[in-house]
Image (cartoon, rainbow, N blue to C red; front, side, top):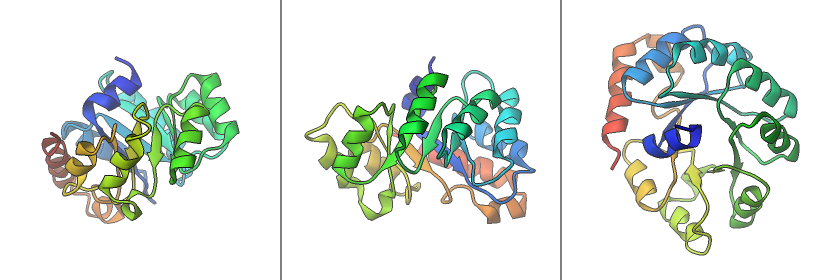
Length: 207
């Protein structure tokens, strides 16, 4: 099954944007045990590339590991060598899209307006990350898809267990879930059972 097929089937991409990645293995194991099948480690942490390499060794072929906050071709090549299976960016950049194409990696750039979303799609996005979704609302996804039904949209920012079903009902291809599930406080507590339970709760809320 391809990376996009796994994301399409499981719907949730968990975004791990943390100050401390020394416990990344514990985090990944808790998320995977809870049913999560797509995890993104953001390059806002300088340890993210090595973390991706480590977690790729841990995960089986039902799980995909990606890189987030990617803004340069150099970063694409680095995460590709580390084994990343998809690339997410807060914006669309030609050099990032080109490098993803060279590395045969699905590219998920961020966009906000219908014009930005369509431009990203036409310029090679595999999925468009609609960001920040908390400022747009669930109906925005349906409104954009009405004239552009072929797009794959992944709302990110403000997605949580209470509104995720609405985003999916309005046509979202997948959901980017971040601090509502995992944040620095979660890591500070080292409560992996709680993280596992929270991950399971998100998965169980899927339609």
